[in-house]
Image (cartoon, rainbow, N blue to C red; front, side, top):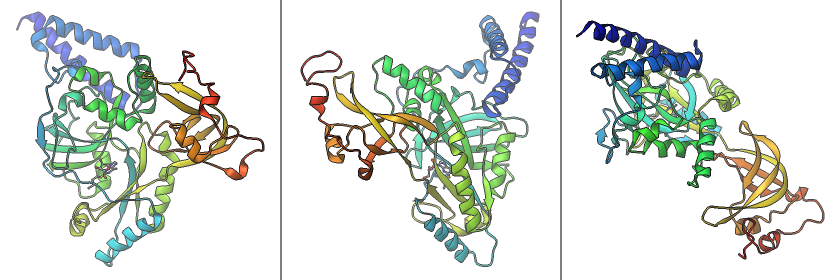
Length: 420
Ligand code: IVH
């Protein structure tokens, strides 16, 4: 190694360390300590040095996050421990039953449980060996998933290396998501390009991870939030609630808010508290997961045929609100399909202001007898574009008329004026 090269190697290592540190501050702690400009300067210095001394490029360099060639197909990989699903419920009564059941199975014991967000993303397993990211996989059928390591490497909040103190083996599990703003921006771009739109952030995240070309994935605003572990070696943790600080300490993006409860009242209280703050998270959530905290107790509770007895997912009802339907406009799709859209008195629902809702098609309007001037109930479920669920007939003003699609647009395409 020449003197120049040795000097470059040293500087490259410094820059990588520093960039990794700033990535962590930016993506995990949301508390950057340098400006974007300064960050870009460090990054560029590293790129320049690596271009000049290409022998010194290593796969774990922050510059290699976008890289790798497009794949022909994803390799199939077996999970070290199956990735299971949870029993779902929409009723608080069933949450009570769940806790009563485990109390019956473990009589005279304290059974602390953790309440945490149910993230509405795409399940992922990240395997770190001796602190280095070795593999990322989708859930697949629970036993075998797609090897999506290349794609996950493009996500900057996923560190290539863990901080000091990493165990021999750590499989972290969580969800890949697309944040709301990124999702809206991506759909805006797709609209301009005449591409089909993603229905919601989860679909957008799933569609992104299915890309065989990591360069495309790198342009998608994806993030990861981790809520648990799978296979581990050298991890000395006996309760679930200790996993979150452990993941965080190792530099991984973990669930930020969780509660420990020891009674039904406390569980329901936590579920309500979570409902009050979950719309502030960058990721979408659709429920609360209640899990027995102690791993020893979990083992004794075991599994039913398809899910653990020690956990349940409570799903929040989609939020519904009433507002006035000011107008119905017709949108013309790229393929010439005409879609009626409700123009609403703007109203706050599930954390964002809504001024439009989809009415699907003419039949739907007829079936629900939706008229301009009506007060309507709109619902926002997983979809970002809400739907009109029903009309509040008791609030219908006098003099409204059933909506006639063709009359409304005078039999002409609202864009080109041609007959339809
Ligand atoms: S725990 C055996 N915790 O929901 C329990 N899952 O139907 C394994 N999910 O496949 C899952 N947020 O993809 C767990 N905080 C959370 C979750 C969560 C979302 C997903 C996960 C799982 C599905 C369960």
